[in-house]
Amino acid sequence: MTKTVLIRRRRALRRAVSLSAGAFALVAAAIPAGSAPAVPTSDAASDAVVVGQPLPQWQPGELDIHHINTGRGEASLLILPDGTSMLVDASGKRNEKAPFTLPTRPDPTRAPGEWVARYVRRVLPRDAQRIDYAMISHFHGDHMGTAVEESPMARQGGYQLSGITEVAEHVPIGTIVDRGWPDYAYPAPIPGRNMRNYRKFLQWQSANRGLRVERFEPGRSDQIKMLHRPGDYPGVTIRNIAANGVVWTGQGNATRGLIPQLATLKPDRYPDENKLSIAFRLSYGAFDYFSGGDLSVKGEEAVAPGEDPMNVETAVGVATGAVDAMKANHHGSWDANSAPFLRALSPQVIVIDSRAEGHPAVNSFARFTSTAIWPGKRDIFITNVSPATFKTTYGIDKAASTQGHVVIRVAPGGASFRVFVLDDTDETMRVKAAFGPYRSQ
Image (tube, rainbow, N blue to C red; front, side):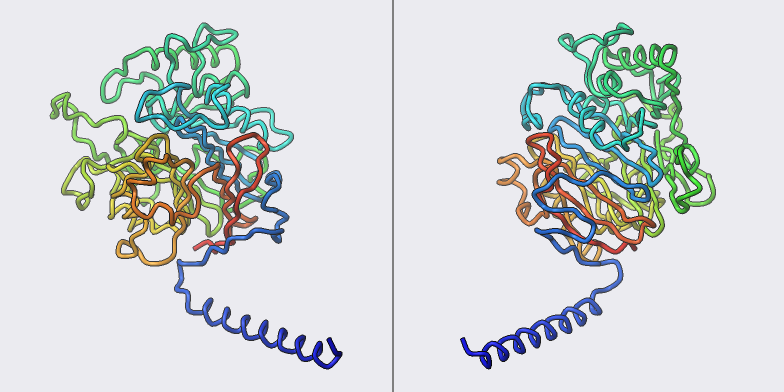
């Protein structure tokens, strides 16, 4: 190749790069507010995350939200900018029957609660001695763990190990927050082996390990707070949105109850456990994230607030307002994530913690992807999709990810965030894919 030809090719390449940059600027200017693009990356990124390599450890100033996939239930770990940690739920039991047949991740040699504990120990700040807070969104086994006859016993305390009780066997917990403490009697006394085991665990841990237990109080923004260096990171708030059908009004700490007086209801009309789930909004600067356990509606679509006094999900959406990212309610099941709820939140990123065949359901997934409900780009990350669900949920192959742990990492100050999908077949924390940065809205 002659020198003249080489120079011409270099000039052509520079001109093409210049034109591409100009076209990108025009496209970026045309993107409406609230629909910042996600750009998949497959090489080294500016924040040192490399696809194919382990996810770098959390650093002070960052906010991490880990959606941990065990295939058996939900478990999320939040690491706030000062290192304060909160585990939200603790997965389910080791063995389930169809249709709850998703494989245990990484493998079935350990119970889900132990896998969660091992994950937590890997990602907690290096000087952390415990999980600062653990929140149980509601009292279903796929969120708190299920103690059955064959569940092993704790080393001390006389209770069985599953879910949250098993996590605490491996990692100390400072404070547990749930919807029912101390009497666990709303809307009626909660019976059964699992609840008896949980209460025995709380009693022993409180007496012997210094565990604090608190009832989640809707409306508050100071119940769950940074414990280590809060003054260094302003703009971090966890707003308690709802629990037990009591929802924050959006004004001060005021709340309103959506469940009629129990004396006016027959027992078969009492709200089910899902409707009583804890919901909260985590804010860091311009970034907002929503989590609401298994909140659900009675049918495929919710009615307007006021038309159904037990329409908790829609009221929670209105109180929460727009967010950047959310955990889908009730694993993306058919009876949750209604159009009014999603329209109120209008997220850029949706994480679906699946635990069974049919997660996410075809109707819910259609709402997640509908720009008629809310405009703008959105990316959907699913922790686990069964072969059967690939056949029944139309368009699921268009999701950003359908297998793996999902980590949202918010940059210091909260102005932007990225999403990382991690390999869940082992404990290497290998990054399978990276998305972003997204602009917090």
